[in-house]
Length: 79
Image (tube, rainbow, N blue to C red; front, side):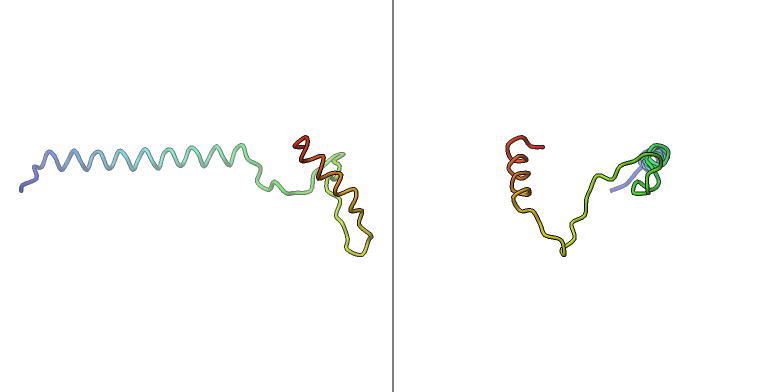
């Protein structure tokens, strides 16, 4: 089985074009992700930000009725 020179050049040209387009696409996506996404999404916010989560310490008494009410509300409304 002989492979012609022309067919080999077509395959190599296709592979070169495919690799080039893949690397170009990766570069564009990487650039856009660095341009639009924050570098550190978990940094301490500036301005008048309000802390949303209240940490529960184990030494404090826990209100289980409040938890059950919130859980029922979550199951009913999905919020």
